[in-house]
Amino acid sequence: MKISLISNLRSPLLGLTLKRILEYDIKIDSIILDSREETQKTLSIWEERTQGELLPIPLYEFEEENIPVLFVKDHSSTVLEQYVSDHKIDLLVNAGTRRILKKNILDAPRIGILNCHPGLLPKFRGCTNVEWAIFLNEKIGNTVHLMTEAIDEGPIILQESLVFDKKDEYHQIRIRVYKNWFDLLARGIRKIIDEEILVDKLEHTVGGRYFKVIEKEKMNKVLEQVSKGKYRYQY
Image (cartoon, rainbow, N blue to C red):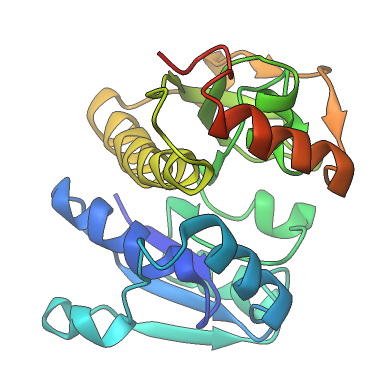
């Protein structure tokens, strides 16, 4: 099976995702990088959430893997579409693209584009789902699914919820979610390879709730809830 990652050069997710995928003995045929990179705002959010305890891994750390890297202006471009066709790529894996992908790219790989969403679909779609789950005292988790034109919908491959310690601080919860994100995505790829999953046979997730970025006032309540060990899934 031919697998390529899509991301951007400054994404903190890329190296960490690649490391975990390789640990599952999965061969990556190429990495395709988009010109739209992380902004200072998105990098600052990563820093706030991880407090320097989950450092990105630069691509040069993987030099011995000899993975080809392709640069495109836009992950929805006809250039990428043609590349997928010419190289018979079976699966694209989202490892940090900042694009909303268009139908031409969603349909380009034989199997599709795999994504890991930091929320339990379909209940938690949209933004800051970890924070909303804490605010609503509901379960935090990740969902590996194949992408469709509808945001945070599509066939689910794997889903996993997490529990935490009462002593865990907010950034420790966030790091746990990120680490599970990397692992679950790698396991999702492994499952597709090993089980020869037929996409047409999978149930498509639709509906659910769509959340906007959590407001500052609610975020302060989230931080207070966690610091006091009062989030329902802190044991």
